[in-house]
Image (cartoon, rainbow, N blue to C red; front, side, top):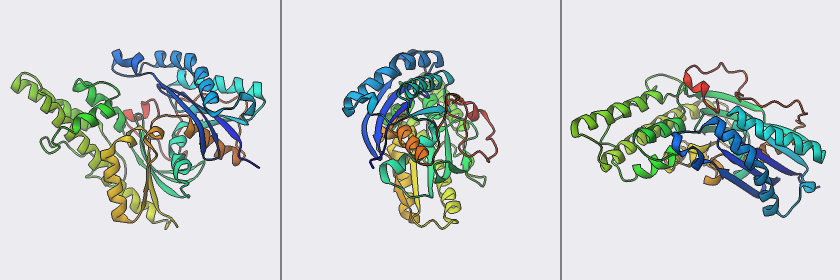
Length: 359
């Protein structure tokens, strides 16, 4: 018997997406970004994002069906991001999914967006449980031991700004375009990372928790000092600031990953592996540092293709398929959730980071 054909929907932030998946075969994946709608505001405006999702999600579904060469009647189940995220966008996806599931008389599966990222290495690399996951995105950052489709243990996470949020704020401080991650990374290639020595927050404390708010503040102060001394910023100043900032983020994540690996290896996994996923996982400097760490410690390193690092519906369809295989489905009472922790037993992280879109 062939695997079910699953339609995935994603609308947790500013990407409207639909995908069709059968097993681990991605038959279609359509993503419509909203960067142009939010460019004048320096960040994502929730009301604008929600309206765009309502206007675009059905178009994404139509394109995905055409790309896969199937019809709605061929779909066996609907998987949708039910949280966490900007509530208006999440609600848009959940309502569309409910309508489709009702009309087609097929199962509905609500998926945790963060679980979609965390399970992506199983979609792309057939990674065996348990594996260590660094989930690093615009709204969240945490180290997880992934033992099953609903079995996550958090080893540590950000207590304030997530790395992607810090990249976006850095880009705004330096007059670079949004989204900030790609802009800072591209500009950093022209810079010297040793010119400015930025702090490596929380490395002097045990554990795997992270903090990036102070790093952003340090960059702001260095920028203001340069402006006061020379009347403005030169292009090389911006490049060096980006390079120094990116190096600090890389060093913190690599050192915290080393600590997380030590905890994970205490479980003596049969096939030890570190996976990285989420939007910031597209940063090649970060990937390089984690890959070198895995080579040193004897872990397999895996990272999804860049198109599956950022928000997409293929990961939601895959997570929905794993939940469906485990007997998990939802009825019309499925709620859109602005917050939805993966590790339900862990204490909430303190600090402003828990107020982010994906917290």
